[in-house]
Image (cartoon, rainbow, N blue to C red; front, side, top):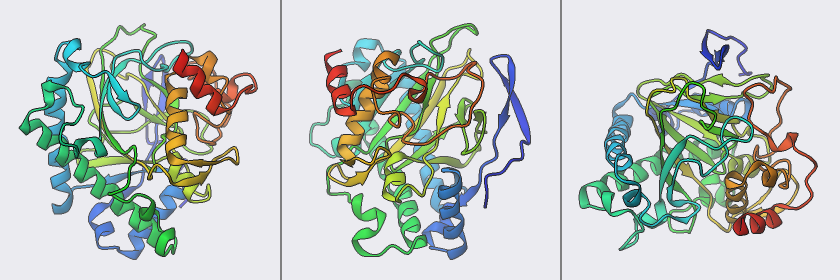
Length: 366
């Protein structure tokens, strides 16, 4: 199953026609049944493209779709609250807490992002007194968050298990054995609100990147997500499909697979800048002490990779330029394209002069 070159439709963004890339559908119920043909298709999706739709339009998946809708209701109320209520604890840790608009790099060069975000980690939600703002720390909302995290964890672990089976992995080598529920990790539920902006605004969206995670489980009912398939010369939109989640392969699974899987290069842009856009992402991440070999050939733990890449995300372009060239894109490469409307990529910056650990220390001071 090679990458499709068919472009069935386009959308106009930033004054030009942008492709809408087709994506494969993987049936969640068939993965639960470990159907060999579906597992084979899943493996090829992850190796060839690094993303796919997870079809949840079945009795097993409808529970997860219900969790999504309840989470959206919670998000509407949370993001409508005063800033001081949302920012009660601030950013407790890179995978936990509130980030106001402008905390990260935006889509356009030398700009900031256009969204705010609240993150609730899987480890934190299980504590007796989790660091969650009081505005959503009532019993009803806590149950919504628990259900959303539990359901997303089950869905992504099902995918991991199917990938292990499809690749013939056994015993400790199976992917799910580095994602055990009782071991510390930075797995987290991230809820994002992209604010309306003027059509000519510069501080918009979310810069191009690959995800830190092993798998990203994403719901977004509105247009805005763009991917850049391996070998493609430009970004293209992903069509929101009712009843489906979008699954991205992240850096950690790419590393764990011996770099045979594709880590999805993506970004978010405002197709309709006048709307409030909401998205829900569960980032399934490996146990903190899991060892990988990254794209620079370094032996690194999942926890260390998370911390280094997070600080690169939140640093300004001049500090991102100091990171290893593989940091923002996880070692994935791009074909040349016009620089117009392009994110400032670390590979286009001057040669790195310090390592990622030094970058982390620099950004913490910054």
